[in-house]
Image (cartoon, rainbow, N blue to C red; front, side):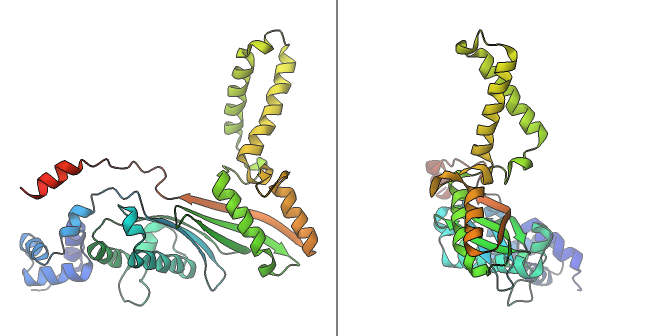
Length: 306
């Protein structure tokens, strides 16, 4: 009987198995979904359905500048750090980063619909294959792409943190600013700034910070007899400290903490006889914000031997 694309998609959603295998299973089962699922289980393919429910909070954050100059930072998650160090997994992540650079997908779902390099299959299908081959749930979580300017990537601790710095450069060769870009990227990895520049801090964040600082100042016994206008000035001074701690360009440069990142960039530009502006950055810490599953190992072993 003829197997429709809609049926194949339905079985894929039910099992998480690749499209081609789902089509073959339905063909073998003459369109019967229960028999098709049974066929997939017999072949060991549907085992990934259970794995897909496992929380993937490990993995890598990977940053790259492709041959076309486009910079990409991407996070792909696995269940364990052991798999994150697997060559098959790492090669998969590299392929995805290059695919983002060349195809410019709008989001993760669009990336999953792209054709995987060297195949005629989608990224989603190949991901399903990797789940089977590696034996763990794999999730493509997020990516950022910078197409303009000079991009410098940095990967910290084998992919625990991935950073991409984007700079606008005039009158200077791109290769001359690579060292600066890496220094700035290392700064971002270490200091985790929330904003690029103090001008990027939104008013609601600023208002909340002022509110907290004002309460702290008023509750400090040392300020008990100080007039309101003096306390206000103290608060504004502390806002300056907030910028220095949370805004990249206002942070003290880690390699020379007597100057800010902004001033260091300006000095390098002057030395090289051109202009350098840090336009944007992205920092991914692998697994941040994902609630990790606490497995009862003894219970899991017991369930496997029943």
